[in-house]
Image 1 (cartoon, rainbow, N blue to C red):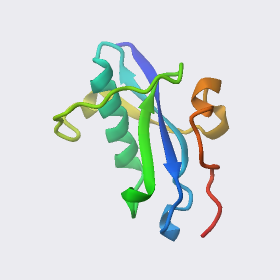
Image 2 (tube, rainbow, N blue to C red):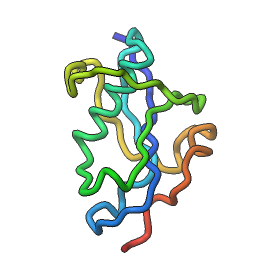
Image 3 (cartoon, rainbow, N blue to C red):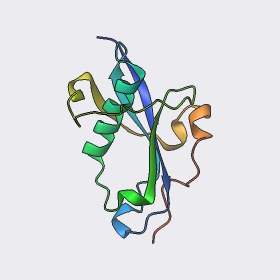
Image 4 (spheres, rainbow, N blue to C red):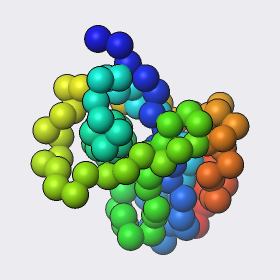
Length: 113
């Protein structure tokens, strides 16, 4: 199965010390035959499974193609129901494609609280 990289962009200001290093850009590898909505959900599932966040309300978390295009979300989705269709990548920070880097409004890693 062929896979493509989806970038998860996390912007915001953490209010919890445990979340200080969360803002930034992460990657996930997802199956290319998924719909755009499914790609977003799989990438976000893997991001959340690998990065605990104390206060989700502090952050805007979105999934993007390398072109910077934001992927739409599914209106109804059972979390982790498609997780076998992808895998977590890593924190990519400044190694993300230029169009994805433009989406970052927070510095990463975030300054200590």
